[in-house]
Length: 224
Ligand code: CA
Image 1 (cartoon, rainbow, N blue to C red):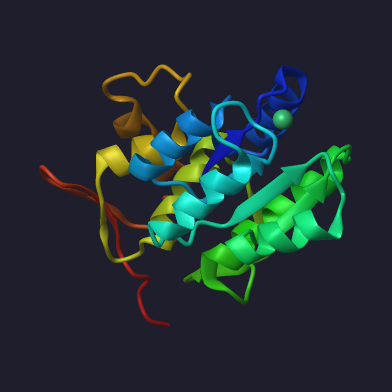
Image 2 (cartoon, protein in one colour; image 1 turned 30 degrees about the horizontal axis):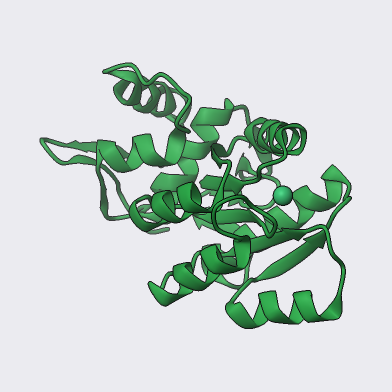
């Protein structure tokens, strides 16, 4: 899961970024509307946290252009003004949810989880793969009812593979979903993570195949 945070207030931007990173999301930060607009046009995101009051281009305009490109990425608007007109305007432009500053981080996290869950498959918060079960809200993997101990990056990788079960995921897609801009990505980092994940889930029916020259593919679970 990769999230774009668009916020010009440094303190708030840092707090939001840290909070999301700790929850195992890959996070990019844009500090003005023009930069946000540019990155949204070219990068895949699973969620945008969008401040309304921004330099260069306001959040409403970023949102308007995003929806004009027919993107359905969930958008959580942040605003300093709590007026009905603003809320209605934002929702009419295609925002999915709304938070008025100041807000508490636990509430922010809950809204983020709800929007990602909605974008994930619309209804349930769980993805089942044989005896494995991934809780997209709590971001934890279970084997039967036993929690599987994974690092934040491994969680992100499991999540991505499960969401593309039976389809090839390229290394570039993995890098895009697992890392933010600020992260150094070693040349064989993805191989290392896939290798570790295979080892950790050896006991489960979690077969990640290498598709030469293309990427990786998680097999559908065997029947029964
Ligand atoms: Ca602002």
